[in-house]
Image 1 (cartoon, rainbow, N blue to C red):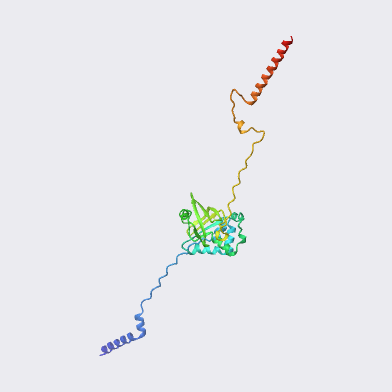
Image 2 (cartoon, helix red, strand yellow):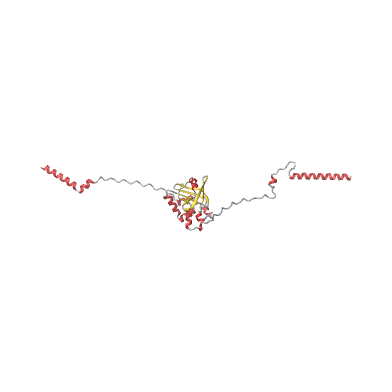
Length: 261
């Protein structure tokens, strides 16, 4: 009897525990798992700072000053960092601005100056080898817009650039690593969209001076002339003529003395 009561009491406790919320939560809760760490983010690519590059790469201080004052440097930098196309920039040396007399950049408005600087960039990365094929597609639109185009020709590996007002060439490569290409040019690129199509003709080359021979110097005709052996030179013929005259005088005097003797 006692065993039977103990058995019923055990069953009652088991049913009571299973119906309790605390016991249900304990039984239903899965084993805790340690969190899986998220993968580390990929390192950001190293971007070329155009301001630093143009500061140390060469005498490009005037061009860089114009880029910074017009905020065009920000446009070029954004294209280099954020686009898949890349960028190509043509950078004139400081001497190109010093030698620029007409037309002058001092008369340009802020908008025109900004367009002129954008005119020195292409919204795509080009190696020097690409310009051979690019010359077949000229004119090429620049950052300044559809009216601001450049013509390219490749002459035995030398890239020539024409803008109407400017005919120049790429003199050296400052940087050519995708997505940025920076090339040094000898002259400032002047667009027809700003300065018009009334382009003055190029000055004619200065002819070399013709130096006349000195009066007492022998002429080219007599200096290289040869004389026949029968004639001799002018000085030798003079000596022969003088000798014949003396002989004739001696004969005349001798004949006169014979007549009066």
